[in-house]
Structures are given as structure tokens and as C-alpha cells.
Length: 298
Image: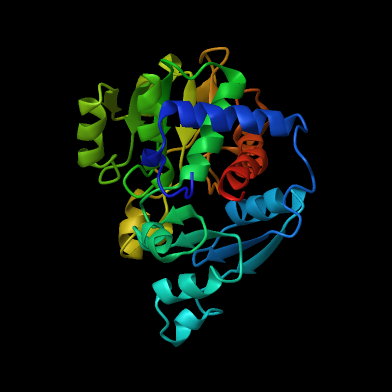
């Protein structure tokens, strides 16, 4: 695979192969000098901690080097240069590009003009394929993915992580339960597409109505940066919270995931429960992204 732009570019076999490779990497089955002499460009025009640093760590563990551009203001785009021209220039310096951009479709555009592979690290409210792959890897560590009942809670309208994840889960016959504040539901077009693919999508008003049926609870924050104004954000902020009391009586093997960062949607007391896997989920970004880099950089 030349680029990682959308989870829609994958079939199940490709996902399973990458997860298996990440598992091998987790067991130290890789050459720490494999990427010696290779250079990765990290172009991040939105804030990031986990995604950016885990890609940097992944490249370093493979023996390569990273060049990081961490803001729009620090780039020539602040002078009026187009994204396409920036990508054309940077691709002449490096062996692959990881791009995060606030505009949906930016990564696809970058892949069309770049002379080296492009990995989408999040494009607006669009896709986040590397996050989806590490989410699936984390689930697979606890249980088979096939046929799971998964609950998606929070900002499902703007949350690119859930947009990517739901499509991937449709490849595994998962049952998807959604719970969102008013106005932040999973986009109707995506729900229709999932159902057309034979995926059962069940919408709920309250997490209490479904939590005891779930194998996985995937929590997302209300994303302030995706709202057109602060008034709209505050109307729905803090409208749900996961607590130990809420998790009492859930399935023995049920796991709680979160792409992070969290604000106050998960009570810190949950961190010590065996259900909590969101920090492990974050750590899984390194082996998964190592596997991705091995696929795009020969």
C-alpha cells in the first residue's frame, strides 16, 4: 500500500495482516535499524500529542529520523503557500509524510501531489485510519472482534475516530450502539451506508439503556474545536460522564476505550478499574504505527 488515507481503502484481510504485524512488533519481532537513513516528515496543522509523538517514537524505534512541523504559523503556508505546494516541496526531502490538517480531504489531496507515501493523521471531521487500526488492535487484545456489541458515546458528528471505526467494524459484523447529545449524532449518511452494508446500528438516548449489553464502550469527548461557536459547545458540554457506579454490573470482559484526550467525560476513578484500557490503547499506537511505516517505506 502506497498511502494510508482512509480506512475505506482497506479490506478485512489487509487490516488483519497489519494487526498481526503490530502484534509481532509488540513481541520485538523487528529490526531496530530497519529504517536507518530514512526520514519521516510530520506535518501537523492541528494540535496533537499522542498521534505525533507515537509516529515519532515508531520511526525512532525502527532506526529512522523524523522532521516535525507542528503549526500552520511555522510553515510557509502562513505566507500564502498552498498545501499542494508545501507537500510537493517536503516530499522531495523525505521518504514518507504524516499529515494532520483541519480540512477534510486534505490528506487525499496531499497523496495526489506527493512523490512519497502519505499517511493521514486526521483530516478535519473526516478520517483517522491509524487511530482506527490501533483501536481494533486494542479490542483484539481482549476479545475477538467478530460480532461484538460496541457502544459509541459522545461527539459522533464531528468525531473522525468514530467515522473511521464504524466503517472498519462493518467488516467484522459488529453491532453498533450509538449514544450522542442532541445534534451530535452519527451522520445520517454514514448510518444509512452502514445499514446498507448489513451492519446493525441501534440509536439510544441514554448510555444506561444499553451499557450492560456492551462488550466495548468507546467514549469520545465533546470537541470544542469542531463547534462553530462557544455557545453551541457549552450547550452540550459535560452532558455525560462514565463513573465506576455506571460500570457496575457490566459484562466481565467489557472494556472502556477513549482516543484521548479526555476532559471530564470519564471519572478518574475509572482509571484503576480492569475495564479501563484507554492508556493501553494509546500505547498501542507505537507498534501499530511501526507496522504502518514498514508498509509504506520500502
